[in-house]
Length: 236
Image (cartoon, rainbow, N blue to C red; front, side):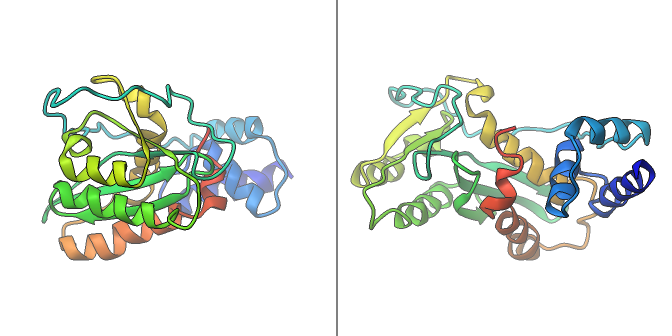
């Protein structure tokens, strides 16, 4: 049994481009009906020297100073929610390709890690975040649910278009402290896992920006947007 389990773990690790850590391997085993503890998976991966390669990351920032008074940090690093549409998180991440840069802006539900809405563009402008927010608001138009929307202190979340949409939809704003990425750690973690699985350690030399946005980025976000899949690791 241990030998067969080890072989399965090695196969899963290699099949996912050496990007899965022990928690993701454990979740994959569980979905396949394999009952084993995370500790055993971690021990076997260490034994087989299955280590996820790390990449030095340059974080995109849209901070342009204190344009106005920032709202209170209502989330306060509590990324758990009792139900859907209670707390939403958002941020922007950058993908650097040989063909240029692509920017992704998602809205993530703290309850299960569901990607409520998202937009992707070659420009990190107001349209990127406003389009994503409009789509997120549409999902709660016919309900009384009004989630808290948490972001960093980027300029996008302080421009008139964002503020008017938030006000009209009666959504509460929440912001991280200045330069404090742990205040939005769950969203940062989502970006990290997404990039580890679909972006890092891959050759994008022959990929156009349109192909990346329509296939690579879009396909991965849709895959990660499945609440059953996200629940396996979102709050770990």
